[in-house]
Structures are given as C-alpha cells and as structure tokens.
Amino acid sequence: MRALTVEDEGWSEWIASLAQQTRGGGEDTRFQNTVIRLHDQLGHKVPDYFVELYRTEKSDDRFEQRLYQKFIDSVHPYEDDQSYRALYLDIGILDKLRPEIEEKGLLYFSFLASPVYASGSRNGKKSGLPPVGYLPVPEHRTGGVKVQLSQLDEVFAAHRTVLIDAQIHRFVDPSVFQMRPLKPATP
Image 1 (cartoon, rainbow, N blue to C red):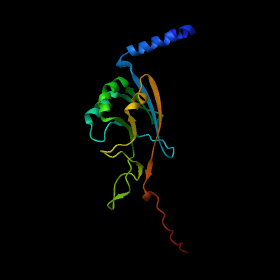
Image 2: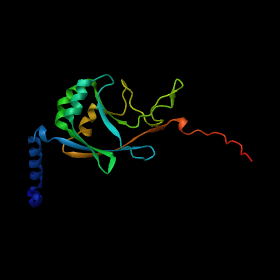
Image 3: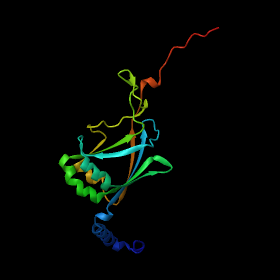
Image 4: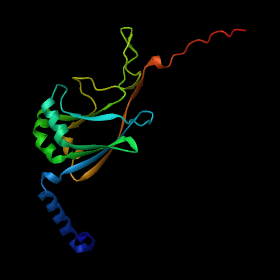
C-alpha cells in the first residue's frame, strides 16, 4: 500500500529501499517464472514435451539430478492448452551450481517431444515408432539452445517472468505419403 502514497520526490528513495529488501531476501525468494509455448514449423501446438537442461554431451547424472530436482522448483502445464509450460526456476540454486556450469563453459536448453520420430524402416524392418514426430537429441550429443556463460545472467534472473515461444521441426517419413498409379478402370 505504501507504493500508492510515494510522492515524486521520494520515488528514488522508495526504489532503493525495494532493491535493498530484495537483496536481503536471500535465496529463498529468488525465482524466475519461465513460460514456454512449443509449436512445430506448421504452427501446430506440441502438447507432449519435456524441457531438458544439461551442460555436456557426456553422462552428467549428478549435476543434472541437482539441476532437475533443485533448480527447477516446479513445472505446470496449462490445463486449457498443454503446449504451454510454466517452469518455476530457483535462481539461488543456479548461483550455487554456477561453478560447475563454468567448468564446462555453457548450459544447453532443449526439448524432448512426443511422438518420437523414426524413419519408416531400418534394414528393411519397420521400426515400430510413429512415422511422424519429433527427433530427440541423440544420447551423447548436444543440441538445442546453447546458453553461454556470459548469457546466464541475461537468460536466468530473479523476480521476473520470461515468455519463450519455441518452434521445433516435425518430421514426416516419406512412406506416409506414397503415390501409386491408378489401376485401369474395368468396364
């Protein structure tokens, strides 16, 4: 309520007092709300996906466990449109993990969407996976968006909401659409 009574001449002092309160809040109150909307290149919504964060192409289980269990405080899909996800990120935890991120030099951000795409056949046999879908980042490879060390503070900052409109490519196996010659009409 005090904000409604601050006069113009006291505005700078008011802003400084808010900044001090924010700094004094500690890590318990340093969160970023990140809202993601995922769609494909045709504008179709992608409702079934997982947000991935990792720092290296090699197995990094201990680091990733802390990243998923501590840094990502909660994830909420929007009930009316599952292509939206709200991630509540604990920036205080990210600050604690920063030395380990600096060790590798960057952080990756990508999506694992369903259905997973697999081409129609391998060695003449059907794969059993849908012929239409999204390619995952293969194990032991990196992909997605690289967040450089110099960008960490820009991408992840406390006390704000970030909106991300992301697009991934939907693949369609050539076997889905096959043109066959028409049979001659029988009289």
